[in-house]
Amino acid sequence: MFSPLFLGGIMVKDMTQGNPAKILIKFTVPLLISVCFQQLYNIADSIIAGKFLGGDALASIGISYTITMIYMAIANGSNIGCCVVISQFFGNKNYTKLKTCISTSLISVIGLSAFLTVAGLLFSNPLLTVLNTPQNLFEDSSLYLNIYTAGLIFLFLYNICTGIFTALGDSKTPLYFLILSSVFNVFLDYILVKYTTMGVSGVAWATFIAQGVSSVFSLVVLITRIKKIETPKFKLFSYEMLKKILYVAVPSILQQSFVSIGNIFIQGLVNKFGAIVVAGFSAAGKLNTFTITTLCALGNSMSSYTAQNVGANRIDRIKQGVKSLYTMSYIITLPLFILFFFFPENMMQIFVSANDTEIIEVGKQFLKIVSPFYLFIAIKLIIDGVLRGCGKMKMFMVSTFSDLLLRVALSYLLTPFFNELGIWYSWPVGWLLATVISSVFYFTGMWKKNIHNLAQN
Image 1 (tube, rainbow, N blue to C red):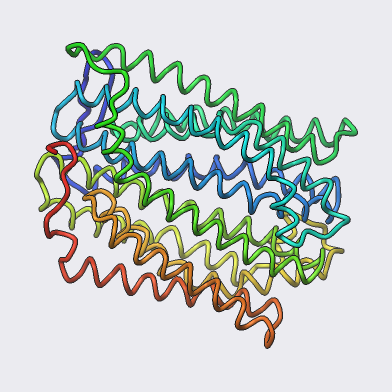
Image 2: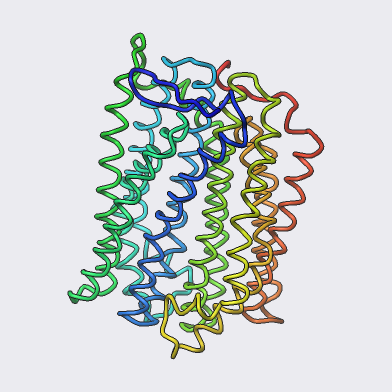
């Protein structure tokens, strides 16, 4: 059974014992719900902007979103780095080093977010120029992006706190904060857009405030809980520990960042087709991102589960966990495929009115092309979780960059022949290649050779 463990009066979850299927279901479901609420930030922005401010506002936020995805990628990569190392220390029952790893992660991420905030504010307009942002969308895109960038410290703090809670097997606490934050964000979006003249800036400030509230509460609760774990004196910051974190975090950050950078190149291509295609891609892209981010929760869950079992030298349990998450991936991807493939017009009308037929048609084409392949990317992400959790970062990066490079290359090669449809076709081809590569690493057993146990190095 999935029994809780109490350290200093706080409940954490040991995933090295008990039925893997039951453990992963109880651990993963709150993560999936968390992702759904986290996506409400961006989806609510687009829905409210599209409904109350029009297609240009929707397109402006969509263009900015491509850049903000880089920040989210770095935050998520940092999250994964600390999560894997902390999970291994937890599985190894080394609570003193666990505390050092936590404090090192928090200090490092504060410094990183400060650097990115300054750099982001300085280079936001040049980035929008590189993206071929249409002139009528430039001002609103820049305004939204700058406000979002100013709140990066909240994004990074929340993500690192979530990673720490997850590493300790607690997927419920981040969920509670996220529900509160997401509901608050939607409320602020509605009030600031409908009842003020703030326009796109109102959407950005709603996200800024909601993320701030969520991150501060998460940090306070985390520090309070960690203090209750009784250990000998530990280092607040350790360069040796930072190296362990970076061993996993840097490849994860590079992977997610390069994917986001690849999306910037793709967005640049999309922007050349004008505001209607940009708006359609923005709306459909939010639905696609919602799906992929939800599936990423399966991979993150697998990372924590794998890392704990690597730390406890229970490698035999990992394959059982993979089988359990495969079943869960079928349950998730089937209804999303049905909605996006058979009812794309209805899904697009969440963001725009039924009269915006050209925008709806663009989004409809995108969704019908990519949605049949969601199961394949789900399988890849689960295997990625295994590779990260056991420290096989080179294998992880090979499969990811193959997807990225092929998607970007195909987008440029196919657009002269198929216009924007060429960009949409590149998605499933890239996903299929990456899934094949990841599957070879996993099913041949290559991932089990010389597993990197950071808790013992």
